[in-house]
Length: 234
Image (tube, helix red, strand yellow):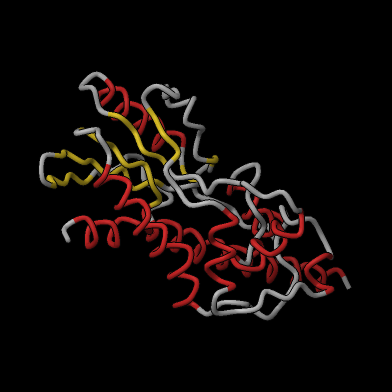
């Protein structure tokens, strides 16, 4: 019996170790473990635009580098347009609809919580991960930074032009801030990208182009960079 328990323990440790290695490799490839941010600069008409492709979860060293870059750009009189889907909802059911669209819990307290299931399964992360700090933590204020993003209501309306968002019993198993329990996805991969990435990129590019400001830093997730680059050049 003792030998069987020992063997089971060894197998469990090995399985967790292999899983941890794969997860760490994936996080490294995604840039989650980066210790610095690489910016991208665009010149459009008479505007100078710098894109900070953010990770929403990362290492403290990464966000320290972000703050250094922001401090430097503040001293050069740049203004900052930052990503944050605007919660304009007046009905809690809309928040459940929005979770059904994004297919994960609405991260009210940051994205690190989305890794809870990995922590609970025994995954050993290579580095300690933290949430992307607030705009205020980066030293930005309402005078030099602006929330330029779409609203939850607009995104829901855009989806509902082509799809019915019918809430099911599984939608209410837990709070809209927690991981999703329904197995069927409302949107496929291409649809998800259109409504959550492409449409917001179009909105952002339009706001940048019509802005009165000539020196703009865009603080948006890394997934938006390629689309922004393609759109801003048009």
